[in-house]
Length: 261
Image 1 (cartoon, rainbow, N blue to C red):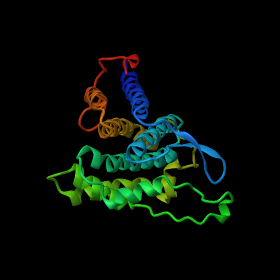
Image 2 (cartoon, rainbow, N blue to C red; image 1 turned 60 degrees about the vertical axis):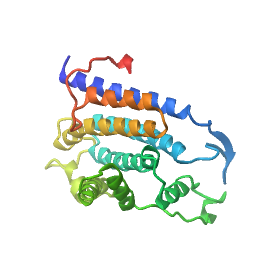
Image 3 (cartoon, rainbow, N blue to C red; image 1 turned 30 degrees about the horizontal axis):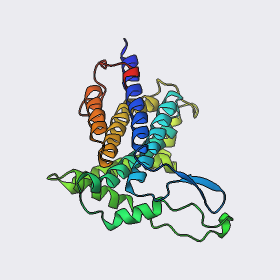
């Protein structure tokens, strides 16, 4: 089996495990119901809280992970970078939401603010132009600070925040269309979209993909633990040990096939 096939198998196993975990976690909650919003009926959780938010954020993370793989394969490195930023934020959101449940600590005011904004409908009037609601969004810096001091006990919290901040700033350029990133699409003669799989920007994204799969698997495990499913947490944790090293790089051939996930 070639290295590429081994890596594809590891990614497939991880993605299948996340899909299965979402089904198991969602089954622990009351099913969504059709409710009337400002426009037409939509499915919503009746009384959404941290547990529901964790499941929904895991769904968002899975979708972004699948998008990232498709964009890298398509040679669309600029869009892959934007998805990496989404994955970074979604992962930190899951850690932020899971903290009070995992460590059995009292939620902070920022958790209440986050949930209130998270469940807020896009518009509060059938005519979007007449919508009046405002959003009270918890800043990324506050979320990073909570995650750092909650999950990095005994280490330099300010350094952990600075590292996370630097990573998010790097990929925010893909979201906002910074010149330095767009110029990567220029090959000396013309701008190319899509690029070839062998072009440096695409290869750079491909080299980071395993780390995003690894982090997504770990964040899903945290969500499972927060929902009280220790067996699911253990299964996901053991899978990431089997598939990835401590830096998030793929190990050698997995000992199980895709159908085992």
